[in-house]
Length: 151
Image (cartoon, rainbow, N blue to C red):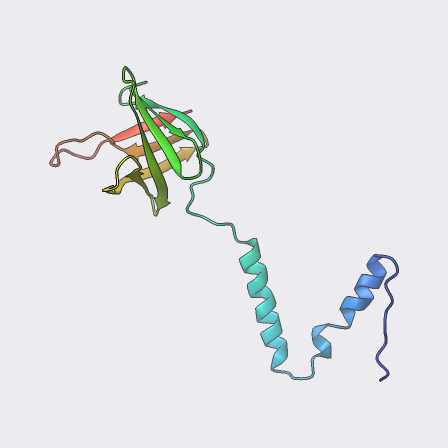
């Protein structure tokens, strides 16, 4: 019975402090509950403050090959999951579904039902430039080569 009641007619910091002070850790009856509540609070704070990684940031927009052949191809990231590849002198455009996975970009063609996913090394250099493993077929014995794209 004798528990105090607080009426909040206005949203004032003093009233909020008074209401929250009733739920302090010193009011918990069981000593075992204090560490549990503290650990739970730290866990919730950590989870909510962590930033999701793995999507390589915002990659939307049109990127043009700058090396090894400047202007040969373009990659247009048109949405969160779709990229369109075009080449100089060609009227064809290939659309792929893409996803990032541990230093790689996975491209899946959307124009066929029997789609294979191709995985290429991928590194974001800065907000406007990235490096990708050569998209063009090459001799398997040849050393890996990379293409650079810029906005």
